[in-house]
Image (cartoon, rainbow, N blue to C red; front, side):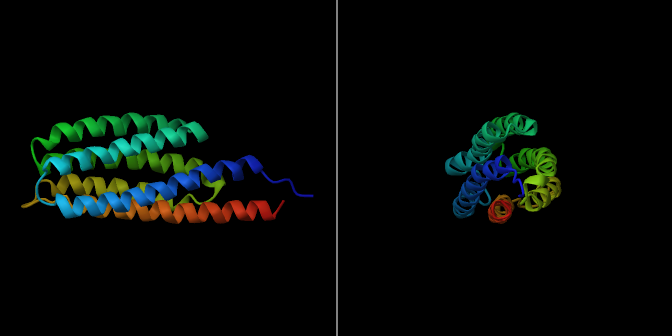
Length: 185
């Protein structure tokens, strides 16, 4: 008789649901940002660019309650500071928003990478590992693109969609990993 680590399979279920929600949020958010705020930060754009890191805070709180991964508490603090920083930067325009967003993407990407590496045994984490690494590179690109002529928030919308796709793939892989563990029981 094989003993299955049921707690690992069971802990993947809430994470999987959270990843599906994060995918849906990212796609809807990116569409709204792309339609309303590409080259300027109006009132709707401010709500959107501040709302994204605040949603990240809420998602990390949900994740931390179920998994108790220490890195998530760091992510909560970083994303909360990013929301405040982006709110302040919004008054200065797109370049300032891109600089703060870029710094947040670099730091949050490193945290995501560390948490995902720690969760490898759970399965479905390779997309999160890749996403964390890409976030670091994208964040550096946002900072650099802030100084370019006509900077745009469209790149931030694309970043959110790509991140959402990584959450979707990870959610699917978590489901498969959980099914495989249960079949072995």
